[in-house]
Image (cartoon, rainbow, N blue to C red; front, side):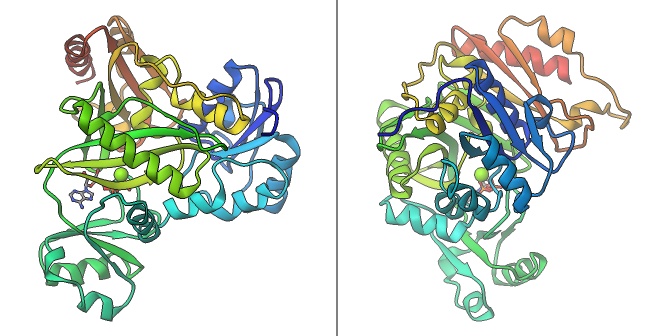
Length: 382
Ligand code: ADP
Ligand code: MG
């Protein structure tokens, strides 16, 4: 076992978005310095870090500067090229590894890994050629056609009812490699954030129940309504198998579907902290970002304890526009007057519809209390 990297050292992150910003906050709380690689001069994480290397992810000079400056490096952006991590790994410890990230970046590889781990996933077929398109089994329709790479927040997906729609959808998506998944009868969606160290020991956040709107996460609730101890154990078992199967070191989020028949299906993984785990900053004594820091620094992992019920609302750029389309600033003073309101704004200068500008977590001693506060917050935000 190698010695941990202690506070005072510099920890680096590839990607300067809000996840990187919250990572930097957690690292700095422990006394680490932080370095960010992101080409955007006003990236949310770059703005709060000691060093901001402003180059592309595969820029040799940029990667060398990160390797020079950092004692360890992680990633916050799912589509950071795995090769950037592999290049860095030759010089500095990186967590997660490029190979694990590569699996999570490709839906076909991801599904193959899930199946190899003995975890159920949606029936699906890979479509890379005209012949594969024609050979799709009837049982996969109606389904969802998803690009194998680069999809997020519901982008790169088309719901298809029949064969004609499937053919049209593949053309619409540019005939790039895709995965067609059978449309499943979802009861609800959950996710689980797991952190695994180099020795293979893991801890996890409580299971989160998620509600999406227009393909984007809208609300996360903990404790997750409708998840009993048996279902929770199945979800934990699935996440552990997947993390073990990847030989994963770091924070991994596994998205799961609970089907109407009660069965559990793994949907996809994110090789990093996840939007659905943001509540942990305010609801748990150890957050997903604390766990990310501990994993990469080789510090002990301790199981997070949920000390408050919580609901997290994503704050999208839409809130910065009134019904007539004029720009406005939400009434933060009124929001902050609510007991248990934890407002996180990411410092993005331009509000755009659908852009994640921040999140608001409402904590209370009971789920009912948290729901009451959410209703009040929603009334204020309009
Ligand atoms: P993204 O990378 O955009 O998050 P997902 O695969 O998670 O893509 O799909 C986005 C959402 O679409 C899911 O959260 C779920 O609501 C719905 N969805 C995805 N796959 C299926 C499926 N096979 N059956 C039913 N709903 C699905
Ligand atoms: Mg998803």
